[in-house]
Image (cartoon, rainbow, N blue to C red):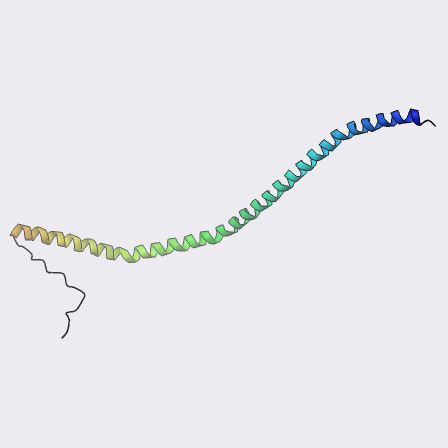
Length: 122
């Protein structure tokens, strides 16, 4: 009976509801996008924290390993120092011999290099 009056009123209410819902739908979509971005950032941060924890736990053993390597290198230097001194003395002695040979006019005849292969056998 009042359909002729209510029909335009319903139409107006429907249009107003659609206009009112569009900004809410956009806000909801933007909010969901922001939530997804925050979720992605959180996962990324958690992954970075795992990597940092792994690095932090490996620093101690790595430090111990480097300390052992330094100790080994110190021991090697102590062990090889006399050998290096002897090499230096030999080189110095060779130089003095060469100077004496030059001074007294001696000439060395170079020996031919010995080959590693043995002569063929008959």
